[in-house]
Length: 285
Figure 1 (cartoon, rainbow, N blue to C red):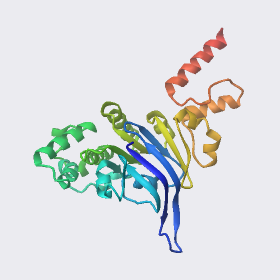
Figure 2: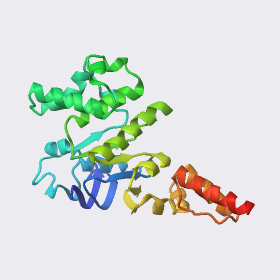
Figure 3: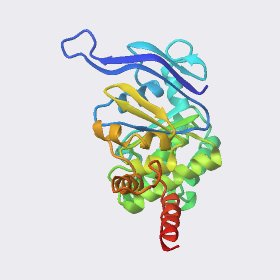
Figure 4: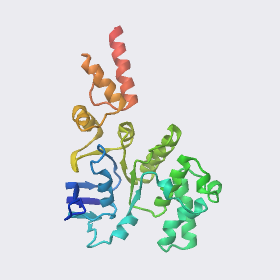
């Protein structure tokens, strides 16, 4: 098992009048090669949870295991962060070097890699995110578009060669082209490199298209942990906690409300198109 949390709870400022419990009795495991979507309303504990995934936070109660080693006991949190790469929301704000090469090389250099190894990792990581090494290595990261800056930030994490890539709202604030660039590269990484990915997102269409599995958090607890089609069939429950469903699912739910016999768990445009074509063909017979 790549990652496992056992009965994890976490309280900020525990023992003080300002104590606030963010996670309650979390039990979850992630296997190598999975693409997991993490969704939940604002304040549900998503950011707190992913910081436990990479050792930035240690549970108030419970245990976190990375490759069957307990974080903080058998494996140091710093080593955990090398294995579990975390890309924060608006990661371009963390760019600071004069060149793209310098920013992407920062992590491997701190790991003590040789200059030859650093160059190999930087080139490989930039190619992973769809940026040509020779064209971008000497450019200032601050001269790039928003989508390009974010891909450079992701490349900096990939250069550490993590076992898992964790992304917190990676498309937030980007235009449609920037979003498509980021999502297509994540899909490419998952399918070609079998990289384990955890994607935190408020966009149901994003996670429906990319994730093999969804974890739904609410008030610090796991509400659902299942395949996307099963999760989105619980549309009413999702709406009750302030979440939506993919646009296709919403459309088909509206058709059901109007008495039409269509599936309630569709969320892919291609699948929906096939169903609609079949409906029209049936109507004209």
